[in-house]
Image 1 (cartoon, helix red, strand yellow):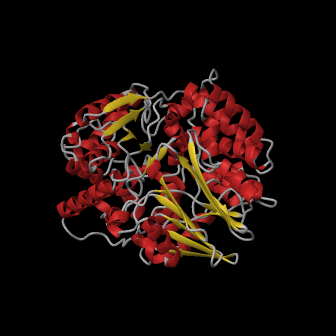
Image 2 (image 1 turned 60 degrees about the horizontal axis):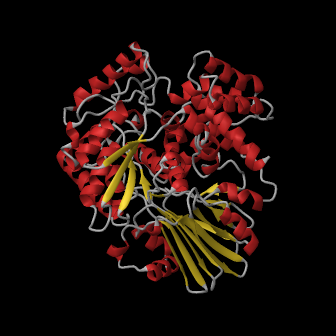
Image 3 (image 1 turned 180 degrees about the horizontal axis):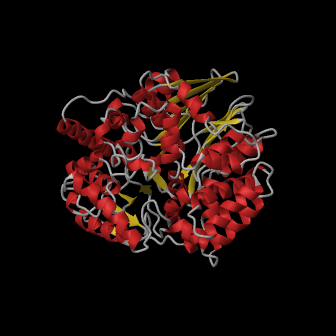
Amino acid sequence: MSGICGGEMDSGELADTVSQLDGWNAETRWEYEFDDDALATTSPSIDSNGYTTWSDGRHAGVVYGTVTNLDELGYDERALFTAVLSDPVTVAAELEGEFLIACYDGSGDRHVVVTDKLGARTCFYTADGRFLYSTSMNSLVPLLEDPTVDMQAVNDMLLMGHMWGERTLLGKVRAMRAATVLEVADGERSATRYWKPDYEAHGGDSDGYFDELADRYEQAARRVAGTLPEEAGIWLSGGLDSRTTAAALLQNAPPGHLDRLLAYGYDANPPTEDNPKIASQIARELGIEYSQIPLTAETFAEDIERVIDVTDGMLQWNTTANLSPSYHIERDVPVLMEGVQGELIGDHLLRYHFDESRSIVETQFASEASASKEQVNKLLTEDVDPMRTFKEEAEKSPETTHRGKVLDIHYQNYYARAGLESNRLMRDRTGSRSMQVDGGYLEWCAKMPRYYRKGSFPLSHHVFKSDAGGVPYGTSIAKLELCRRVSPSLSEIRYERTKTKPARPYRFHVAGFVGNVVLSRLQSKATYAGGQLQDFWIRDTDTFVHEWVSQYVGDATDRSFFDADAVESVFERHMNGSNNASMLARITTLEYWLQNHLD
């Protein structure tokens, strides 16, 4: 899967640990040892710009990923690592890009590990005792003494389908936070947050806000494109995020980089064939090649266990299913990317979540939980507070306003623990980049006024519950405005979600989304807030996915902390027509991971 590992380990432990990080394709491996400390990386050989290593004997460092503004800072490899070791907090704040940096200073027996501004490349480390770290928690398990399950993390997984805060499934292991420097000397751990944006809403006119947003977006594209090889791939759908990203990269790539962009897609979200059709139109307009990759119960049967392994059992498998076609691309493309996430500009934290009548804990529950507290309590035999992690995060944020706390918790948690976690599948297959991890762009996103976020129809929450609070508008004003500015020509190609061209006024998109959903339901088609591919796969008794889920549901009923009757009820109700794929994916993700990595 590629990654880095290190800490207090001998040569045998280092070799065993780094071998567990190997990905799908040929990997380039680099190892460093100094007395009883070590550092290693393994990265796709095909993406030579996707990692950097350095050592002068007593010091060593690895960049797993890419720092996209090295030229602007005037750093070469030696200067970068020397600066990080000398003043990690100050230097980290200057760096842009998606990366995880790990350094060792033999002169002071000191480890330094740095996450990027969104924590896009997860790093797990031991909370006390012998210091160990790795991008794969699985690889740390053999090195731990008597590892035990963190029941609060099990609760969080059932509640959200992913983790939150620093928790992992193991009580002795923590996940590093975004924008953090972790320094370890003489066994003492010290974590410092080196960056956070200003969350105060922009007070100027809308044109000024969106013009600046587009400028910063294209600056991020220029920086990332400068790290790309001549050929790269991108997942392209009928949505706004992927088309805007593809256009920005092509328009801003410097000579010798991204001479050829290959687009890939699949029929899902929802599976009505609209996404591939629209993606083909977008590709033609951009002048790039488009290939549809199969995503079926049969193809996913080959991948279901691997996607759980790659994400350490901490992301429900029906979320990762949509990137599993990465394993079925025949061509060895050096870098594979997703579109810049619309969550940053109003597609996840919605207008509803900024209602100050709700507490910060309630707001986190509204934005992240997709199961009820009652359902999670029924599934567990142990007494766990479903809201404990949300309470802890509310207390840890230094912000003093409701808006500031909501955004701060989101920036610290959502991308590192959920939004970007499935990208680990792409890194398991080949190299990858995330264009959105750019401080200038993130700072402007953090200033976005509430009105530009996705809203919901007034009073609709009385008859329909959703993460938007009621019947949602379908998209955000900001996403449409960004697409129009970055690529006016692509704004003339209809948007899958609303069946309307992005160039048209917002009210047409609001109506288009509702009309699209209503018509699809009348025609019994898959649609938003309805049954998805994985619901159908599980319900089809002829598929391996059904067989696999049935097996691990059965196994879960024998696990002491699961209530057997409650687990069986979730499965039975699904087979009788309820759409419970998400909860079944959470239960079976946990059960598979525990059986194969802990039991």
